[in-house]
Image (cartoon, rainbow, N blue to C red; front, side, top):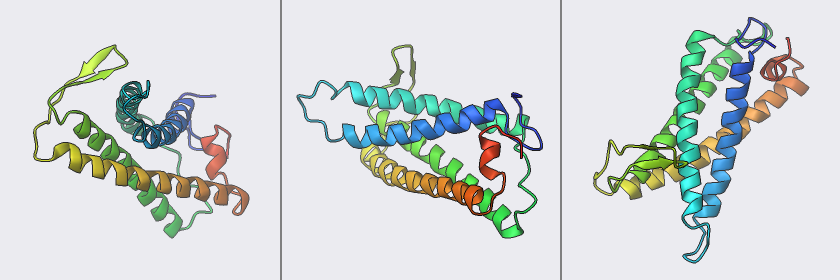
Length: 183
């Protein structure tokens, strides 16, 4: 399989980034829901949030690389059987997924840096707190993070269902291309 995207399918780099981010988003969502319910005496009370932050910042870096990669290796064009409305819906849907994901990640960053401290990433390095001390920063960013995370996960499920619809009902190459197969 080629690394770069071609006119008929996605390359390995795009596929790994797509499925890696998808897995991380759902994992972070589950971890986030679980960790907010931990009590004071749980051994995971400090470990789970640190893991959540480290993975979140890794996803942020991966998403920045993913945007750069879209310019270096543009995605294949939509299948020929997609009408104008389907093409517009796909572009708008992908844009919303990208904007939603970046917004969730930035809100998470604002929660974590509200007190002015940087964010350690798996004990390897620390991301500095560039923005802190805003009025009610942690609370407002926390609400934004929560609601956007729910919206992102619901929209990602709809995105997956649309891919399944294209595969099983329309019988086109939308899904197979993201699995690395030729159209």
